[in-house]
Length: 374
View 1 (tube, rainbow, N blue to C red):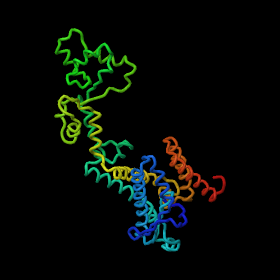
View 2 (view 1 turned 180 degrees about the vertical axis):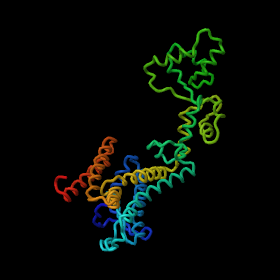
View 3 (view 1 turned 30 degrees about the horizontal axis):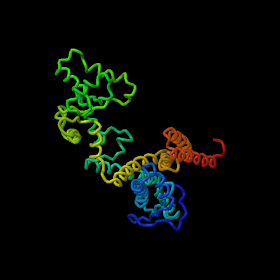
View 4 (view 1 turned 90 degrees about the horizontal axis):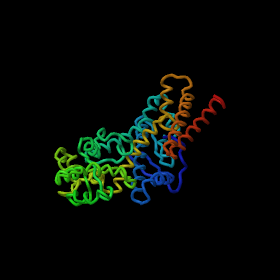
C-alpha cells in the first residue's frame, strides 16, 4: 500500500531484510498493539497477534520491494501507522527507468505485495494441516467448510451428519417433579442424567402399564425454567461405526464404561487436541492467517492508494481508455464508499473510517484534476 512516507524519528528501528533496507516507525507498533487488544488484555496474546501483524505486513512489502528489484529499481520499506510501503530509493531512480517500466511492470510490482502475503498465509495453513492442526480462523470465523481446507475441526461435522450418532439427554432435576422418583430408578448408571434409551429400557424391565418415556420427555416442554437446548451424547454402539480421526475424537471423550460420551466433551477435547498448545504460537498463527488473508484481499479493493486502486489505473491505461486516471478515481470513490458502509454494517469501525477517508481523498484528487463538478 502506498501513502506518503513518514518522517524519520529517533525511535525508528532500521535493519536489512534480503538486502532491502527496512525502517519501522514507532507509529506502526502503536497501531499493531491497538489492533491486538481485542485478542485479550494479557501481554502474551497481544504480543503474539502484534508479531503476526508485523511479519505479515513485512512480507507484503517485501513482495513489492523484490518486484522492484526484478525491474531494476532499488527500493526500501517503511512500516508505519497506515501499514507499510515499499518506495524507490529516489525519484531519479524510479523515473529514470523510463519506458521500460511499463504498465505491465507496474501491475507486477503492485500485485506482488498482496500476492506474496496471501501465499504466505495459504502455505502456513497447508503446513498446519500436515501437522493435524487447525488455524482457528478460516473455518471458525470466515465460515469456509472445514472439508474444503482439510481443517481437522471438520471431524465434528462428519460425526454430526451420521444418523443416530447424537441423541438427547437431560438432567433429572429438569423433569417435572412427578416423574423424578421413577427417573432415578431408570438412571441405571446413577450419573443423574437420563436418556430416552434408559427410559425405554426401564419400561421394558418393569413391564410398566403406564408409559413413562414419552410423557416424561414431553413434560420438559412445559417447564419454563428449562431454557437450554437439549444436550446430546454419542451412543456407545455408534463408536465402532466410525474410523480414523472421528473414532479417536469419540474415544478421547470416553470417561469409562457406564458414562455417557457427552457431545460437549467430544467437541472440547477434540478442539484442544487440534489447537496449538503454546498460547503465543496459537495466537500468532491465528493472527498471521487472518491478516495474511484479510489484508491482502482488502488491498486489492480498487481504492486509492491501495494496491487495487493502482492496478485499476494501470488496467485502464493498458486498455487504452481515455482519461484512465480520472476513471480510476471515480471507481475508487464508489468502491471506497461501499467498503466503508459495509464496514459500518459489520461494526468494523477502523475499516469503515479508513475506506470513507480514502474515498474522500480520491474525491479531492478528482476535484483538483477536473474542477469542482464532474
